Image (cartoon, rainbow, N blue to C red; front, side, top):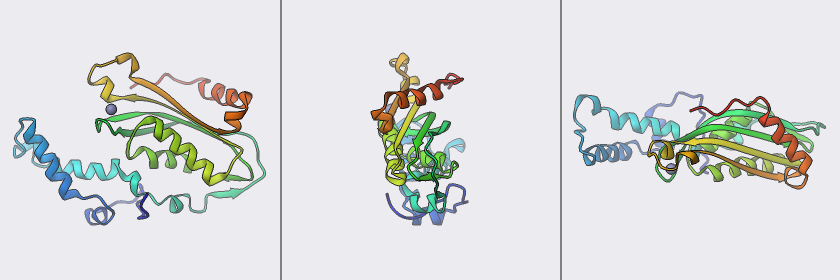
Length: 213
Ligand SMILES: [Zn+2]
């Protein structure tokens, strides 16, 4: 992870993006070549600005590479003697599969049992975003979120479950029944203690709306 700071809430101009590692010119050239290669005319009205739009969009969709995690966590770590499960469920996310550069999207459920330290709740969706806004495979993203919280909070346990739909499966019509995927990563108490793990799984399935995309 590079250390330049990009805050998702900031308005970024093109110069900032170039300084932060997105090479807009190269992306524009490449997109233009793809348009020609599929038999399109990159100069026609509707496509003229497409390479520029894609480059700008990529800087947002792939902004996770350039998040400064320390700055993002900032002062949201608190020492507290609370040792019940903290659970944030149904965190909506959008990512891009690294095999096809097509979206996969869904929900993440994140839980931990503190051991003296808690994190401001609003930071957990931002941690999910930091890892989602990259080229990803769902299994790795799930583990990265869990590992990040384990290393940051040194909690008694961490659990992450991610449910997602992959457009590379959906759009290409292959294995449609496999298009929805669930992955999980567990550390500490969630791995060692079946009752703890079950409490978490019961919590995230209670009242859950089916994933519809
Ligand atoms: Zn894919």
